[in-house]
Each structure stands twice: as structure tokens, then as C-alpha cells.
Image (cartoon, rainbow, N blue to C red; front, side, top):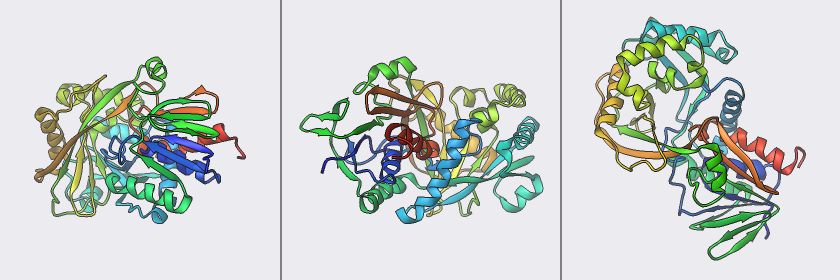
Length: 370
């Protein structure tokens, strides 16, 4: 049966558009060149981060996306492994950033904790002067959640998937592969960081490059984190904090004390899986084609960041790299042909914002009442 919508790409951005269209009663076909999702949508924390996202539209997208995750998780068989966020401030300048954040509308669902409260609830945390406890954030296990969402979309929403299909060209109402040409009323292209195949001019105009990250899985430490944990370095990367005037003093101090970590975009995110193991990272290095190697020096910086907040790290049981499309701004949403949308999240926030972004894109593409 001819689909109403074809989605190119079965990562989280593509799945989000498939869900948004299926909820409007549309017949959806998703095409992906790989046998299963294997890119940035899998190689991440699964941390749906609301707190700290850029103030305004991006923060709104993240809040709406977290609500959608909670809405679909049970039906889709996706376990919400953790909820909330503890942002640990270890320097006086970081405490000032937390206090400034709490004074904004973004801090409405957050609570300030003092050192004694952190010690009582998070006894594994070291050196905390204060903390910000956020409620909207949540964490899923991406290597499990993305396949589960795919199966659920197929079973519950009759979304069709064709894997191992490389799309070569997209035009109005038509998607061409090496063997088959598909037709549909509309097409959404979600190619991640593949800018060479489809609409390369759009990627070039946006100045897109690739961000390479390194991440680690650590053995179970023998305790449970009540929520994911971030710390001072995170406040220089997440624009909800970093754009506050108070963040300038924190960055200046970190440039003196943690220059190597800043140079490689290292900051602590620590999340915990159902088996007790920890996923820890990460780093950010930029190149059009990053090398595929995990650098020992960057791993040491990640582990040092962990050690500063959570003590001696357990054994590293897995390590990996990933890449995602990176450019100024949150995303590219373009109309390269009638009835076609190119959608690329360029801020590394696909898991956190894609569900709400997809609703906006589908309202525009299909009509607000479609």
C-alpha cells in the first residue's frame, strides 16, 4: 500500500517523525541503509535532558519531548532507568551559576540542595558545596530503547520499516534507491551526519561538521545513583547555564584549573543502568571526518572528572566513540523540494528534543489539522 509519508533514517529523529505522523493517522514507511540503528541514537547516554538546555525554544522542545517519552515508554516497552538530575557545584562560582539558574523560569521545577542534603541522598558524591535537583529529566538505555521504539511503532502504529535500503535521491513525492523507487505524498529526510548523499548544499550552507565523542561503561560500583549526575564542567557546555552572566567567572576559573578538559569538551555525565553498570562521559572534538580512535589521554580526562565527583572509578568494561552532525543552532529544518523536509538536529540533543521537534515539523508539513 502506498504510504502517506516516507521517513529516511531510523534513528531517534526519524522515529520521532514516524510517531508524529502515525498519531495523525498517516501510513508511514521508514527507510534506513543499515540493518538497525547504529549511530548517534545508540551511542549516547539515553539521557533526556531538559535542565540546562538553551533557554527558550530548545528548552521548550526538551520539556515537551520528555513528556512524550514518559507517555510512550510503558506502551513501547521502554524502561525509564532513572529520573531527574543532580547538578553538583564544587566551586563557589558554580554555586553562583546554580543560584542564578534557579532565579529563572527554567528553575521552576528544580530544588536547591545544600552539602548536607547531598551527602544524605547521594553519599557517593564528593566535594559538593551545593546542588541543583531537577525533576523533568529522565534516562533510558539507548541500545535497548531505540529497537523497542522501532518494534512498537511497527506493531502498534503499523509503521513499515525497510532496513538495508540506501536512499540515493529524494524529490517531490519520490524516493529513489539503488533497486526501488518509492512514492508518497510527503518525505522527511533525517540523515544524521551523512551530508554527502542527500542535499549536501544544505549542510554546506549551515556549516555542518562532525562532533566526535568518547564514552565509557564502568562496572557496577556497588551503589545506586538516585539520578544522573553532572558537575561544574557541565555548566560551561549546556547553554541554559553557560549563557547566564554568572557563568563567565566559572569558565575563567576552569580555564585555569581544567584547561585540557575544556579544550576537549570533557564534562561529567554519569548515568546508571539496570544491571548497576555506569555509562560515563563525555568529550567533544570537531572535524569534518574525525578519526575513529578513542584517545587514552581523553579517557584519562573523563575518568579524572568522574574521580573528582564520585571517587575512584570502577573497571572500564567497554569504551566507544560516536559522531553527530554539529553546527550553530539547534537544528536544520529545510524544504529542499515541495512536500519534502530535511531535518537534522545539530546540537547533540536528538534524544532530548526530537519528539517535540517532529510534532512541529509534521504540523507544518501535513497541516495543523491533518
